[in-house]
Image 1 (cartoon, rainbow, N blue to C red):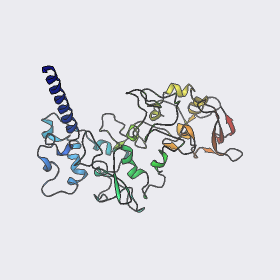
Image 2: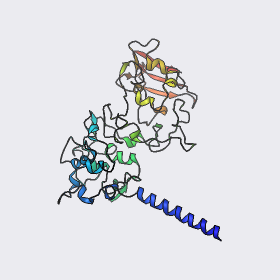
Image 3: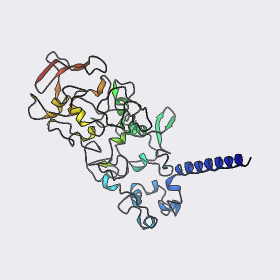
Image 4: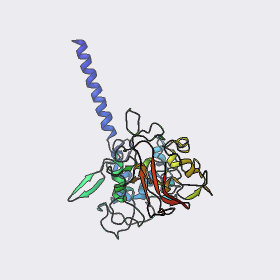
Length: 356
């Protein structure tokens, strides 16, 4: 009896401890008196209840001061997000004023509405917690209902998918990442290709072990170039707000830096060793009859998803044109056998077709 009593008490204590830890993990950060000693007045001064003072109030703690002396005395120093917002490629949080409204509904339905970004578009200050960074954020409106955001890509889609005011050269990311596409980087779910031989572990085509990564987040590629910065896509020195460089031109010198964003997940030695495509090195490094350097991964592969082709194949029309018979396409010849043919013209060479 005594043993059963001890076991029962131990189980109750474990459940209680887990519940407390779980609850603490979901406690809104800005409503936790352990963080915000003076409560609401930490952000709302006097009778200022409009967005807590806006983005400039956010950088009181998340700016150069790191929270100031009050937090420093408790050994807390927040990361300075203003460093990333001053870089060339950034979300335009401090570029425009007076464009954000707490009542706005996204995706935007007005094509003439000004594009903007505000802290409150991605962070709900009253609800965000360590266990749920998307708490309190309104998702896509469908009819009279507004969904709740539970995944990062759902948040990104609010501005980068079905918005009527997308920039001229922007594309609908929801369409590109659709699981019905022929190929896609695995954002909404695991990819279709079962044999990505260049993947660097722990990245895998399908998750089979606890530490395997088979689904990515937008912020795995789009975030600060400085790994010590605050997490998230605030700003980067690299075009496209990427964590690493991605050269997308032609006549380039291949290097780990040139295609750094690709080589984060794809083994460079595998690509240059032609393990998945017998002419990879020839195209990228400019070997053989290529004159003036190689061409970018982007010349043949889209970064997000391809509606028509496997292997993320989509030809960059800046450098690729139709073959002598007017065809521009890739034809797969044998699934998982790395055989196919290309119909196109590139570097003055007619592929009508070229097979491998």
